[in-house]
Amino acid sequence: MAFFPLAFRSARALLVGLACASSVAAASAQESGLLIYCGITMVRPITELARTFEQQEKVKISISQGGSEDLYRSARKSRTGDLYLPGEPTYRSKYLAEGLLGDFKVVGYNQMAIFVPKGNPKKVQPDLKELLRKDLVLTIGNAESGSVGQESKSMLDRANLYPKVVSHAAFLMPDSRAINLALKRGDADVALNWRATAFFPDNAPQIDVIDLDPALAKPQALLLNLLTFSQNPALATKFMAYVASGEGQAVFRKFGFLDNSSIR
Image 1 (cartoon, rainbow, N blue to C red):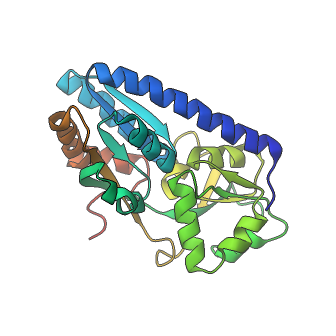
Image 2: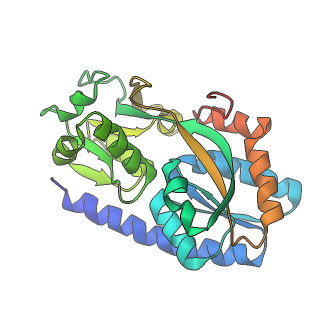
């Protein structure tokens, strides 16, 4: 497996910075309002909805963003906060027995896709075996830090390709944002990432999506979880209902996600 030293240092620095940001957000949220642990991919719709909710309810909402695994560990350690939104549903099933995740709402769906620079200059095809091409510099998510890495691993495991793809990858990145930055900087030719992020305004001009067969790239539910140690459970439950409502789902659609009525 190859790692570029600069990318490794940058990813490590990012994780340290996120840990500090989590502490600041937690301290702020303890004073009043809500603290939401939100996976990087969903930050934009959640931020927009949080700002509207703040005005409606006259409360303060703090958002701690990062990789889904790192965020859960932060919440577990601090026992501070109200809501947890990972980018992949297995984080709920994986940790439910620990007793920290209470009620939840499905607030949308996302799925994996192949990402390439705008115009697809290397003519990458909608086939996971394309990731092994020797003429392509590949980046994927780290399965130990975030949902994009975990879902990449699950999908590639189903195709019996994960060990080969990891060995071929030049970068293992902590989250979807870092993957998109690598593509936009020209550090990578191809990537696996959450599909919705390609449609964000700052990514769409520079990134194209190559869709995969939905039987392989299965839509993954986004579960907004109430934390059982929340000091504001009534307010948190009200925010969950707002995000899952028609108004909330319109915001998720705007940012490229499937809404919670798309899949039954």
